[in-house]
Image (cartoon, rainbow, N blue to C red; front, side):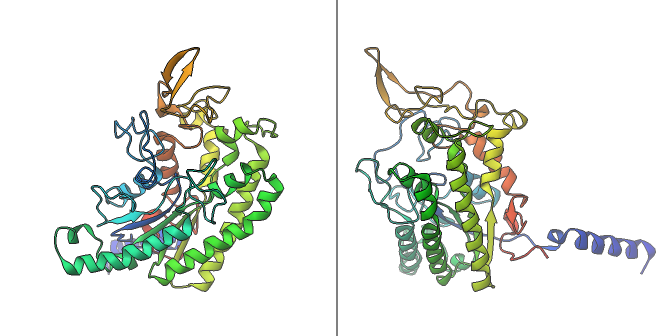
Length: 381
């Protein structure tokens, strides 16, 4: 062996020791199966309930596209980075294509059975996590029957082996906390409900594992106390230095602590699977604490809304037609959503979603610190 060859071998061996991730092979995810709420809903809610109005979707789709944002969501950037098309919503019966997976997420979805269901006052989605799991069971079984039968729909179904090789993504829990806050529970009572919420999450993830899932990418919940719908409805809440409702964020942080403990438990129970815990909270909070550093402004103020210091009112939602001083107006968006963090007081702009994706996809906010494209691996070494 020449000196140059020996040096190269030594160099790459040292690089592998210092950075074990460099030794890992990128995963080949042929599909994504997504479970969640409006943070990753690609059209499930609007397939079941009244559609969104403009200006939803204006930035990327130039029209409402079933997403609670002005454009793409984190899950859309995840799919793109894996060279997959956007995920069709399982509930959408028109023009859907499940060859690269499906999204079972719907806006207002919870992990636990909600006490109030849409269209009831302050209701939540009937498609809570257990229902989403049952929908996945249906898709897994029926898609293979359709493929065997052949015909025009067969090519729109995922291959059988995709269910084992796919990436399974989760972003759910925010509405469980919100259901408590807006259901006249005290902050302490919502905090006390967290273990049951997380245990329910654990049960459903175990069931999904038992159906063949092996690669899990699990987002924690974001800083709910920084969102206008909490700030406007609970104005007396103590604020932190950023202006976020401190105690509400502390509940979210406690949920995240319990969720991370649950992920650690899952790793022990299922050592053959890869469970990646993703700290979305920290990235999202940085948008509120250091907006200028990241190219944003007015982080607490909704881009699309009307009324008050946060440009938000539950009676004047984004895209709604309201009467102001005897004149009907449509609640529109701000001049430049690309520099805004919060879209409609509850959800994030495409620009914020893109920023969050770029941070979390590297593995810098993951446990273990594995990049998205290597999330089929259990450890970095």
